[in-house]
Length: 390
Image 1 (spheres, rainbow, N blue to C red):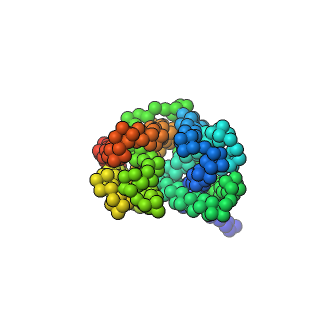
Image 2 (cartoon, one colour; image 1 turned 30 degrees about the vertical axis):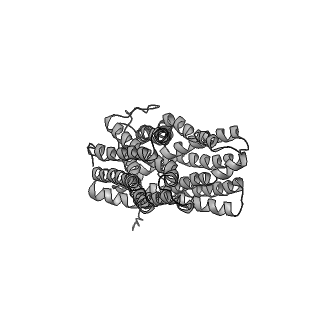
Image 3 (cartoon, rainbow, N blue to C red; image 1 turned 90 degrees about the vertical axis):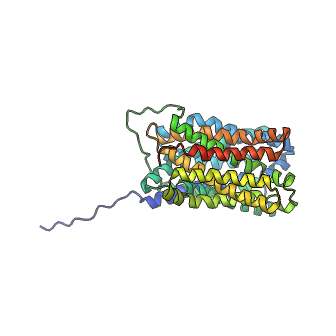
């Protein structure tokens, strides 16, 4: 009797589909954040709050992010990154709608705390997914995922500009984006990794873990780089107005230059790291960051300042993605817990760096502040030489 043997059909998506799905999730998160950021001036005007009040109000989102750090890694390790990232990004989109509904400062503060909480929860979960996909590819691809987040920032800003030009209120704008995000999450839900890599049954999952020596080094690298990022996000426009003395039309040129090279750099960082190694890539990143800042301080004219900010964008583009990728390969704790530990150290730089720049500038000048930040770029180059693994 002739027996016909049919080939076994493998239902699990191939690694390319996993990569595409996780890339979409990064893009959706970036789109959500950029949508909120693009309408901050409109909401400030609607609520009638001053710049000083707005500065304090915007601290609510980082507070929410910090509040999630002790539990994010544990929750992802317990429930799996798939469940957390799907629920987290949907919650992120709904949080955006809640911000649009807030008609008072207390409600907006509460919404921002929640927004920050689910943002970081989703961040740890989606980076855990990215670590798993990276392991399947057996090469660095983390930076390209973060590049998609940056690319979404341009898309969100462009859509926000269009909505403002058409005089669309924030709420319908936010609802539209939330619907798109939820639809995107639903489309990706069956195409992301169902299970995370496990270190074995003997490894306990702590609620929060202090980083070991190797993870602490990665955390300090992220800390130094995120201070530089924060300086660009919060102080680039002020620097171009007060130090470069740019015309009003060119005040945003430094920020635009920085964002362009940061996004572009993330799409080439993986290939560079694969060819030259993690250590050399981070060393070059630190040197580029320091060189760009020092150039803009030493020669604060419009062309040289723009060139300097372009270099800074290239410099910081690869540090956090590559550091997260290295943390996710930890052999001492689950990827999500390692990511949360490193993210906690790094995020302190993003949170406290910009205010410290303002304090130093108040006693001295912005040029002195930016010189100190350049020193942190050099710290990245020096500390990267201590990384043991490639």
